[in-house]
Length: 409
Length: 180
Image: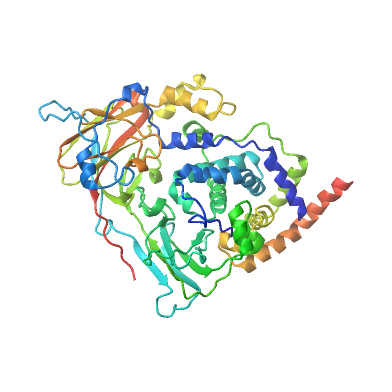
């Protein structure tokens, strides 16, 4: 049906928005808090050099906790606002769990020796599967794998590859880490993973090297090749985090504010400890964390409050036309009128927000910090601009923990 | 299935790539193509643009997991289609509260020949229309479509054959009209 080809012309009519516009949309959705001026936040945060020295981690994998600066003085008055609510997570036995191993298939297992292709079918909770693959062998050998849902991958074998399947890639959350949100999908799905070793043709490899076209369409998928030199295999895993805590019940979308008992950042696991939600309309939230043997992680979350929509209605005449105004301008005006800005203060020192990759900084939200063990900490969130009634906000506190080993066959 | 190396390539330099770079790469290459496919599926160009942009925003939120996907375009297409299916019904409230994607370009006017094609596609149910769009506009093989939709190859072939039967008079009619 060549007629349909004419629809491709429509693609040339469409103006593709600048990529920065999408980045901005993402940023604005994930970060509802903005600070009025950068200078107001240019407060030095003293880093715990000793913690870095003892942890041995680099900045990305093991970010520095925020050290108290200045040190809290227990005798200083620290007012706890009336009406704020502390919630303890409901963590049942088994909720803090490692990855479940659904299948491990290698060509060193009895029955698979000499195979050029391995397959396994498992039943996994929907959207909860993780995969790993490996191939030890000469680098002219390639491996391909697919997981039957449009995903998969390929690569060259390596003479020094680890021959133990490990959790490497996440289907839902990144990089084998456990996301903070609870697993809300129900039901199970059947997943078939297929992995094979191959020697792609020279033409295919040249095509891949050019990287300008779909080589599989042009040359076909490289087919399995028996190679006694290759040790290869894969693992299939699953991880589910039942909901242990929910913020802003009845106000915000529960799927965005339901949290699992345990989550991880760069393989460092964090256990939910508590959530402290500001009293409706309050311009400040404050609480004290007792000294702990474990590091704390605190993150600030906020959402539109019940009054926000009313505020937007009240200011409808001041808003630009939605349909014809650039969305950045529309939302900036809307938020200036009706949203509020928050500031996280730990032990008396404001914590600068992280606008970029917050997970790389070691916390989940843009207003977040890791607090060193062995000290009492005072945590505050202040509304520094706007009407507090227009938002709801809370702090989730987590403590560092060890993830239990996985289970499986 | 398009096997693009997301893990390693021979002779490839190891460089640090941000998660945004992974999305940007696909955005540059696939945005317009995906809009056309969604347009063919939904029949509404503005909805198609919104849905595809939503899919890319979601890809940005996915972080490193997006880089690990081998068939990123298929993933984006699925997310965009799901977005169309699950659009928020309370549109007015959504408009005020939700941070909007950049949105459609108001100056785009689709020609009558394109409208006729989309109208013809709209006579198919979504299952058949999806198979047609994946085969003829996304250039997916029958096997790839079977994998992407999770259905047997035979079912894909049946849907394509049935769709061709249904579309033939509509599309040939359009051709005759053009020739006349």
